[in-house]
Length: 119
Ligand code: HEC
Ligand code: HEC
Ligand code: HEC
Image 1 (tube, rainbow, N blue to C red):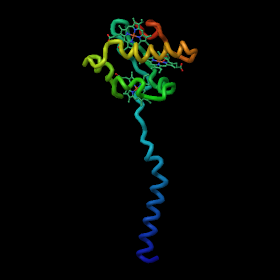
Image 2: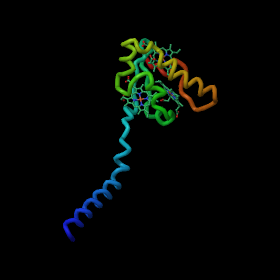
Image 3: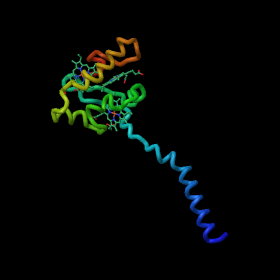
Image 4: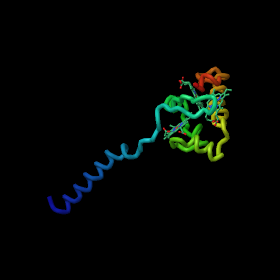
């Protein structure tokens, strides 16, 4: 092999390897956060929340994360900063969806205080 040919061969090999690897590199792993968590529920008591279960039934992360970023503690921080009213996420996101789905006869979550809030 001439020097020129071997450089060509090397370049082709590198491009080939790149094409094999690129699909894996293209799809960056999305950080889905904790599987389960306990949310602050004030005087009514904490709320156990299955995060990953909701990710399987709700396609758009923004359904919830429009109100607070994908960061641990972000919900409490937004309420503390006055960016979110108390019970705003509960009423406008959680209960609103559960109620609408129940009404439509679809698989849904709890709408009564004591099922969500555990003392
Ligand atoms: C039904 C509401 C809801 C949906 C839908 C949702 N999340 Fe979350 N997510 C939350 C709550 C609540 C928190 C906790 C925030 C806090 O700690 O204050 C959270 C926190 C997070 C965090 C921070 C780490 C952690 O575990 O607290 C990440 C990352 C995250 N979510 C990613 C996602 C992604 C990616 C999707 C879509 C595939 C998604 N979330 C869909 C409600 C939701
Ligand atoms: C689907 C679950 C769910 C149901 C049903 C529910 N809550 Fe909540 N509640 C939450 C979540 C999540 C939070 C925290 C987010 C927020 O404040 O919006 C919360 C927050 C609260 C808070 C604390 C607000 C604060 O920051 O001090 C109170 C008080 C409360 N709920 C009372 C109630 C009462 C009373 C009912 C019944 C009429 C009820 N909740 C029904 C999930 C629920
Ligand atoms: C866009 C719709 C939607 C939103 C928003 C939503 N949920 Fe749900 N939730 C569901 C559905 C659908 C189920 C039933 C899932 C199943 O059983 O497969 C469910 C189930 C639940 C359950 C019972 C199952 C379990 O995890 O033990 C709880 C508790 C719950 N949701 C709490 C919440 C809280 C708290 C929020 C707000 C932070 C919330 N949900 C936001 C649709 C929603």
